Length: 146
Image (cartoon, rainbow, N blue to C red; front, side):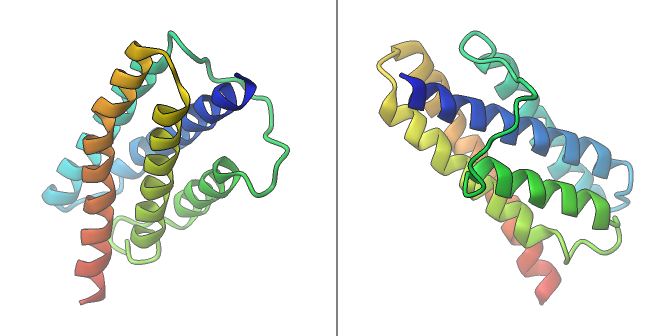
């Protein structure tokens, strides 16, 4: 049970970090396509946090495991926020896609580890949306590399 709660806690922290990044970064965007993608991602993350609230709440307790996905992803979002420039996305897009991929893996692990049917249904419902978010960042990275 403790491990399952830890996974949910990590999911919420990653979703919150991503949400905060995309909200802050949106102001620096000038390309309509990117603004639309960031709006979608913010909406998905906002709703995901709301839908997970009955099972887990965000706390400011630090994760002590330095190898934890949440530590890595929070650092990615922190670095991306620091280095983000709406006109120079190439330094962030691939890392943001990696963050979404890690989030998807954790959501899939949480689905496998829960016996709560409603939670499992909620988590599974977000998998396709997280894939869209991940693909949007990877497409952006590929487009910028071309």
